[in-house]
Length: 266
Image (cartoon, rainbow, N blue to C red; front, side, top):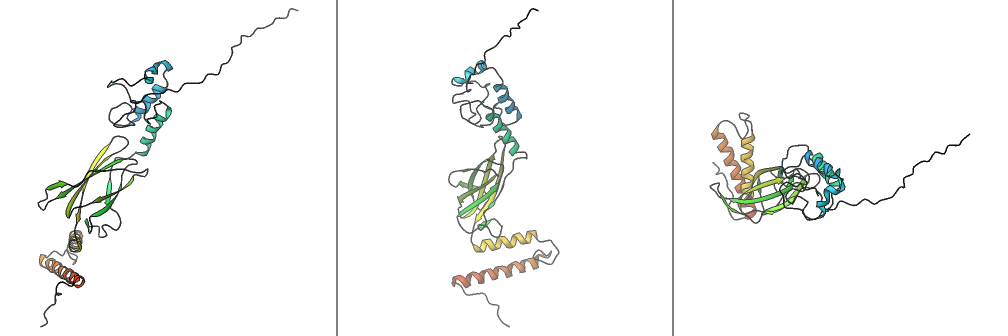
């Protein structure tokens, strides 16, 4: 019997270190870091571009080893700015989309203790504002003094910038001028979306604060219930007069600068 020997072809296995795909400075979008395709917004299309780039043969990305050419068509692959193109760049975009499923909005109010009556009047120049918006959104505050004729007078200081935290919360310390102040808020989130809103705060005193509280109560009171906002104007005027006399007596009792109001006895 003839022995047949089978010869197996053998291929030698070699261990080879993979090279990092390093990119030089300039491959991160300077205006919106997660906007890979530079269309001004962050969408799932940006994730696809990163994944497509990672799937290309090594020699197709040799240009990334050099400085980025000045071209309006090249994507910005480096979302995290570490000078490498990695799956992390795509993951950052995915996480940002997951954190921002709702429409961009902003809610603001004076921090507790600065506006106890909730009427938009504060009794000091230095105040703190708390707000809620999208996670890691950029918040810009511009303050303008308002004249008696409701016209803007002048900007107060430089714009204040801050970033919301992972829960979308932020806090801003600011200074007001006496009288009315318009607070203009501008917000831009991770996805490139923007929104704006205005809020008015008045730096007044205890009299203007009490007066604003009473007027807000008048506006909110259901008509015809017999309260401050009863349908008869004379009764409302009498109620407000009694309140202001009480306010005058209270201030006079503290400052001791005027005689208290007394009703003449018959």
